[in-house]
Image (cartoon, rainbow over all chains, first blue to last red; front, side):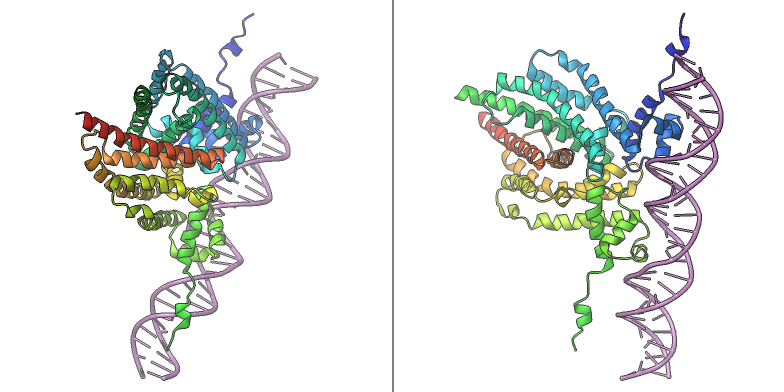
Length: 212
Length: 212
DNA sequence: TGAATTATACCGACTAGTTGGTATATTAAT
DNA sequence: ATTAATATACCAACTAGTCGGTATAATTCA
């Protein structure tokens, strides 16, 4: 007794709405994205939206949470994780972030960074979801940084957490510059500087260790 | 024959509106800031707003332009400019940016960075004004970086412009992190990393030069 | 000078359209 | 038959922007 209807089932409305929210909010921000826009983009009626989410705000929160899941999966499967040397994994991460600056701005720009900036005062719950996403992502990176530090710069005074968070700041900042200028290369250049910084941070410690 | 009425004249409505726009948009973003909010904050009627500006968008553009003027004046008068060594001026700038992270978020956060991120797709003219502001500011810094480079790292392959823009990216990114987390220290830490990067960039070049 | 004219700054009620959200109806799944 | 999912019509609040009009200042003219 096959159930072809279920197996061939189309993407559920909830998922379509989350995707629509991600696209539209990345492009135009939270406030400018209207409920009607979301419904139209998802190809779904207003009733469906409010059947799945109690409010536009809740949809935004759900989108931020889904963003966390999707991106963590995306980076988990990225090739740089295969490197055995933790420093190479850290540098691989940074290079990977540069490589994925392709296509139109809303395609590589960060949903949660965009939203956090805009809604932090009026929608603290959305803000919390955004920070959780950024923080969680930074923590994953911090693990590799921590291993690299133990290996190559055990005495350095900076913490892996702060370097991980700095990495996120640079990436978020580079998105702002890219959006403002319309020139992705500026974002790319900034990430190059970040890569160089991390290299210098470790190379220098290596030298210091040798000299002591 | 004194003219006390004129001399004691109150701040013109136009100026009040620009100040209101700066405060409100920094806090809530462009779209969430309503015309009524702006009027109320400025203590001015709607008629007055539209007498001085043709649209909310034009007010935002004017606010971005005024932001350029005010901030450039503010940094021009900052103490780090007195240093004779250009590298010290560059480092002084970075330290100064860290020092002014005081008070509530909307007090030190960047108007044009906030707006650019939000409006780049729907209000390109606002976006242009924002980029002009960021770019102009970066160019001022690039001059000092350029002098420092000639002095201490003439052969390094990075350009003063890209380092100046990177500096802006870090600062903008640190604002996002601060807003998302509600913790100014994270912004502060990120700027510390930036300072260390610039130091390493020059120290390392000095070493390279000596070794050659 | 001082009255007439004109330009500027300002006000707040109003409007046409939009907003997030609801109520009710219809359809599909079990 | 009952529940879940979707659609549509609708609403009250809000939105940016308009309009008719007033108060004040600047300019012109007698």
